[in-house]
Structures are given as C-alpha cells and as structure tokens.
Length: 119
Image 1 (cartoon, rainbow, N blue to C red):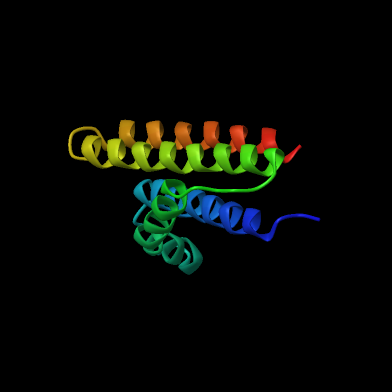
Image 2 (image 1 turned 30 degrees about the vertical axis):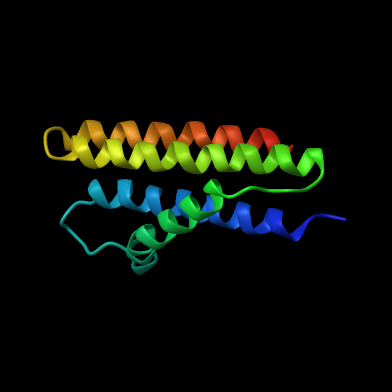
C-alpha cells in the first residue's frame, strides 16, 4: 500500500515546479496579449508553495526505506528549486534573460531527477 504522505510531498514538489515554470514563462511574455489566467494564478502561488516546500523539506520523514528515499529526492529537489529561485531573483536586475534561462534549466534538471524516482 502506498504511503499517502508521499502524495503530499509529490504535490508540493510539482506545485513548486508549476509556479516556477509560470514565473519563467511570464518573464518572457510579450506585451501583445495578456497572459492566460492559469499561468498568472500559478505564479501568484509561488510564495505559498515555497513556504510549504521549506516546511516539508526541513522535517523528518519516517517510513520504509523505499519511501524514505523518494522523499529524500523530493526534498532535495525542493531545496534545489528554492536555491535556484533565489539565484534567479539576484540575477534578475542585471541579466533578466540569463536569469530566466538558468532557472528554466534548473527546473528541467529537477524534473529529470523526479522522473527517475517515478519509474
């Protein structure tokens, strides 16, 4: 039977990825038309999702070895994404295009790490 707590970690990780991806996409959005509402909504949830990710990744998970390893990977992913967002914010003032590209690459790499534990 699958531990339901894994779903909480997975949902938090994927939500953080969704919000960060929305931030990147909005940073590149042209002024021709308004961005889609779901994209704006996802980006507006970023602060809450960063907070949830921080709380989850700083806690201790007790479960079987396989589940604990999955949680460990998800927590590392959340911390990695948090650090990437901080770097993005720091670089945004001087090189916005580079900042967006760097964050986008980190999101992609993190998704790859998460796919490895889903298989």
